[in-house]
Image 1 (cartoon, rainbow, N blue to C red):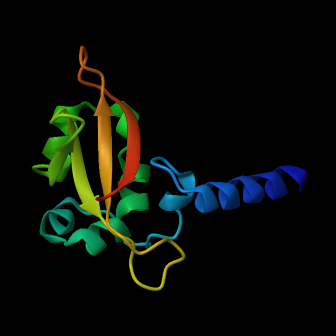
Image 2: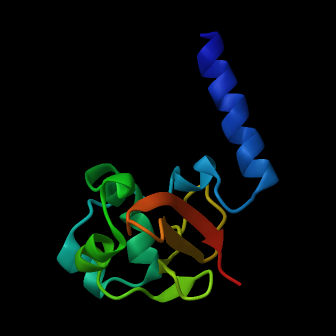
Length: 124
């Protein structure tokens, strides 16, 4: 019970503090099942709805940047000097997440090309 309360407090703190990589941002973005074809035609809200399912079905740490691009198509843009593929996502209306666009960034190791981190960064 204590660990559950601690986890709840941590998530509330993360959501209140904001930041580039908040676990809380992945919660309540929508519950649409990820489908590669739907992703390719979805707008940023549709992609946001599939975010949790995407990360569950395709753990980023098990992929390379090339595999991410093969799965998700051409990135919306790149982050950090055109190195890391990034896709524009937005939570669906009626969710608890702040309704504004974010970039889902796949940070990759420059030597191996493997994804080492996934960031959700507010779009500026």
